[in-house]
Amino acid sequence: MKTGLIFNIQKFSLHDGKGIRTLVFFKGCPLSCRWCSNPEGQSYGPELAYKRAKCIGAAECGLCMRACKNEAIRADEEGKARIDRVLCDNCGECVEACPSKALELMGKRMSADEIIRVVEQDSAFYARSGGGLTFSGGEPVSHAAFAIELLEKARSRGLDTALETSGYCPWRDIEAVCRHVDQVFFDIKSMDGDKHWTWTRTSNELILENFQRFVRTFPHVHLIVRTPVVPGFNDTVEDIVKIRRFLKQIAPSAEHELLAYHRFGEPKYQQLGKAYELEGVEPPSAETMTLLRQSTA
Image (cartoon, helix red, strand yellow):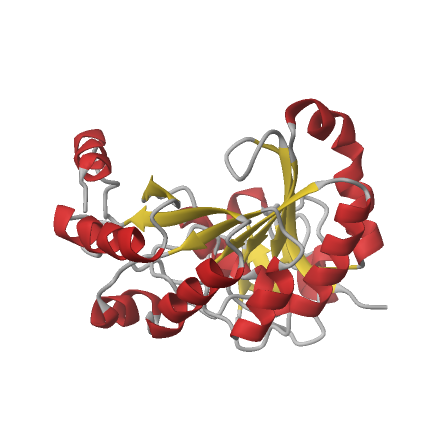
C-alpha cells in the first residue's frame, strides 16, 4: 500500500482555491527558500520539533531523555531538554514519552484512504461552497504517484481538486498530476536567475520552462500565478513588472496574486533547530504592496 509523508492537514481554508477547502501538506521540497514559512515541509524525512516552553524539565520529568536510545537529549543549564541534532535520528520514541507535548514528530506516513477519511469529514462545507481538496507542501509533485492516487479518490467522490506547486519538478510528474486537478497555483518568484538561485538554492530555468509547457498542455485548468513578495529579493516595481511581462506573453489570462512576506513561520525554525536567515526583516508595508499590485506590464 502506497503512503505519503504528510506534515499537516488543515481544515476550513478559504484562500487556497474555490470555497471552503481542506489542505493536505506533503513533506519534502526541492527548494530551500530563505523566507519559507513551512520549514517543517522542506526535508523529505520526519523531523523532531521541540517547543521548549512546554518542557517540564529533567528534575520533574526527564522521560524523553530516558526514552532516547541515542542519548541525543540532555538537560541544558536550566534543566530543560536540549536536542543534539547530530545524534537524533527522528525515531519519535521521545515524542511518545513526553507528557507535556513539548516534542512533536513532523511528518506522518498516511495512506490515501486515511487522508480521504479526514477530508470527507467536511463534505457538507464543500458542497455548499464549491470547495474541496488542495495539495500544498512542501512540493506535492515530488510525491507524484501517491498524489495521483489520492486525487483519483477525491475526484471519484466529486471533490474539486487544487494543486500548489513550485514548478521545480520533472515535467512528466507535473503533467501526470495536473491531469487530475481543477485548479493550479503556480509560483513564479523571480525572473532573475541569479537572485532566484541565491534566495531559493535552485535555478528558475526549469520552473519557467515547466510553466510554459503547463500553459500549452492544460489550457482548461484554472491557473493562478503566485509571487511571494520578499524584501531584498523581489519587492520592487521592476521585479514585478518583469514577471507580468512574462505572463502577458505566455499566459495573458492567468490571475496573478502577490503575497506579502510574513514572519509567522519564524518560531518553527527554532523548534526544528534551524537558523532563520531573515531574522529582523520586516514584511513589506501596505503601501508597498498596493504599489506593486497596481504595477502593469
